[in-house]
Amino acid sequence: MARAPITPATLTWARQVSHLSIEDLAKALNVKPARVEEFEGGDARPTFRQLGLLAAKLDRPLGFFFAPPPERPDLSETADFRGRAHDEMPASLARETRRAEQHRDAMLDLGWGSDAHLDIGYIDWKSVAVRASELRARLGLTDAFVPPESQNSQVFNFWRGLLEGAGVLVFQATGISLDTFRGLSVHHTKLPMILVNGSDSPAGRTFTLFHEVAHLINRTSGLCVLRESVDV
Image (tube, rainbow, N blue to C red; front, top):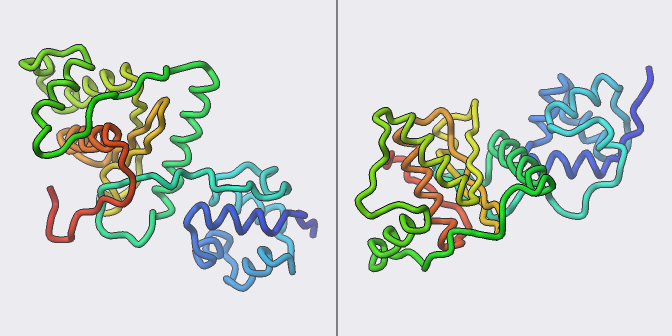
């Protein structure tokens, strides 16, 4: 049976960047974990069918596994997500975040966006009212403005469109439990990103949207979690 001459270190890199365990990958291939360890150690090679399953699970093109591993992860380490006490970003969320980064890279290549960002002052409890007024002005709104839409889903889409017009990319993830995350933000000087959970209610997504806008304005990073007893 033909075997695929993959680069073992590249397989290990892709699995670790995707936040997948050896057991997770073995389950996708319907093999024992020891077999995956052999693939990563160079003691065995996967069949081409197994390579297809690996590529699908790790969300990579087939040719990726024949090249040396990249020098650094292609998933931003500055992601900050509202969720419930995870030791690290779950694999499903890592995949969606990396896909969002790929969309951002493509939009930059096409010349979309500008160097403009939400350049207002730092937000804290003392300055929140002033900063809110500055943000409205940055978006071309008056302090008395309210969205004209009546449905919560329309309200979310209104704010999403307004923020994207200001150079903030907004993505919605699908197929991820709310217990995993509600939203995350990745700060970039050009085209910062917000990812919200499409499984959330429209009002919940709008709340998350502005929670993450505040993170982008403050250029903060790190893990932002909610306790099990709190579900705001």
